[in-house]
Image (cartoon, rainbow, N blue to C red):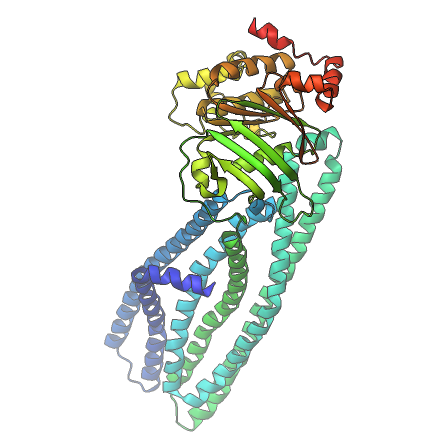
Length: 583
């Protein structure tokens, strides 16, 4: 944490140099009223007081107050403005890291944990850079000016006055060490609460459907109670500093008065100097009081930095990025390919031998958990590569820059990812410069035209967060239209037609065949009607290719595909409706 702060200060050395000078000047100016009071008291005691000297002192006090105001405005504005920039800088660094990371990275963090690192933890770092820096510079300046001024008056009295304050500093240090543990407990309570809120928001329909509102409320109350307890423990320690500070300052004040009476009786100090020492001692209360805040802020800031930096430094475990730019996806080859998920012990893909040609439509079917999605994830480069051969255009996939591969692939996942924007903005996400005509054409290909006509504001209808205001089938077709608009070399539909009826599915398949005649398409589906007209179909089971061939070949073989086809036909999922759409 301190290394990062020092680096940030060095990068803005002129700004922080000016702030430091302003704070030191502010600390020095704070001593002038005490010096004036000392001079006035001594003048009165010696009967040397004059109206002219009083006017001069009043003018000096007014000038000091005005200058102090201007200096305080400058350092306060600049220091806290810089701390806000520091916060934004780290949020941007963390966000840029997140959008570059693949799936293994997100499996290492809970959603609530990431949210806490972006909000609470970054705020903690900002407090250290702003308020913490102010305490350090201002408090340090005050101590640097006050203690020498006290020793100039009388070193014995000064030492007696400072000893209780040194005890205060030691107490703060040891209490702060225990606070470390409480800060971590408090942070974990915040993470747990964030997780609970996120899960409740995402699963509110299920919670209502199963009448679990009271249960969720009880869980939330329990987590807020845990958070309150953790916060109370920290606050109890923080407010222990206050009485301790006042108590020890009281001891220091009493010591000054008693020792002052002794040295005054011996004629070694004046009454004005005794009063000045007393005022200096009281002025030291501010820096030492702030020290308690500095310890707490540093503990919180350091813990926050460890969490934010942990997010930034974490990797997705993928191999080093390649250097070749992919121009076009012509040919994909898997040869004896095996893949195991990180931290898993069992292979998810085994002995995959597959060749996909440009312009080919490949259907991928199989039981749940058979490895269909895992296979297409290899093309998306979401995980580290497995073993065996995985070539694109006769070059190893690892040789290509991942961003250049992404630019040639369109992907519609099982879960529909929509944003709290308009239909137009959701569809044009990958192509913000697309014309309305191109967007409407993509909508037609996704068989969404009729639904769009029923939307209150057409393309400019807002669909709510995650598309909450539209049906599952409409969500899928907006996601499909987004992929069609990009017109990628390779389009992957991962069970992306499951929420539409068979007739709509047939219309989409028909439109897609017309639009993507020279493009490669992979269709993952449980519904065989979605892949029945594919050029080639593979049946997966336990991570292996169990059967492959055209639909006619697989039906003739009377294996798993044939059995599933017969079962779906009996259930009324008639693929012949595709012919009706074509005719």
